[in-house]
Length: 340
Image (cartoon, rainbow, N blue to C red; front, side, top):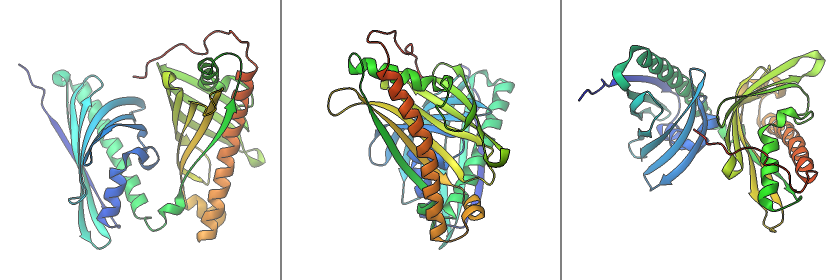
């Protein structure tokens, strides 16, 4: 039986932060969408103390790939081992480890080891994997270094919040939820869904995976463009997303991810539609706009929260109007789709 060769890679970075700080960022995979540039979304499937199974969606060479990974966490050795269980073709095996070595009270060295095999060891597939792995590893290590070296100020730079609206309408809650999800799935078709947007394009490259481009009008005739990846879970009434490009200068956001969720209402009538935001402020952009110190960080957080909330509340309002104004027995809002 033919066994494809195992290809091994390793990259390392020196970081001016305690090893425990860096290990904590690596171990907290659920926050990777705002900690690591390639990671779009992470779901924890199982956990058992020092191990966990994760479903991950990651950008690689301009594509979105998904896999299931098992991780073993060792907080004493500052090490995380990972092995992918369900892989996208043509990859047949993939895994590795994060190893953080203490090099002083506030200095450490982090090494990311990767190994992989591809079906038939085809040169084109091996080269694709090498480029994707090298690029994602560089981006991940650079961002972790930047975050860890701001560890004393990191709490001031990380922001999470949510807004919600109650939606009632014709028919049963499931039908209302389908109407809301359908609107959110294609909300770029509706004028005013995003305040200040002059153009919104949504392209679905694969079932359940959307790329959205938004052009926004800025002050003084300037223009800003954002690009995001959206992943739909229609049977759960959820759409998660991550901004992957933002031309705003100076940047206020270093990273932004979020979720639209249609949830049963506690009262039993209608549904709750929730908009969640997770963000990391760009410290250089913050300094250019607001100056230094805790008061500047507080002002930047308030401004960013206000901006993000204004945008999502406009969408929530339109989703509510759409569902509550729909006929009692309309067609299904969106056909069932599987997330790859």
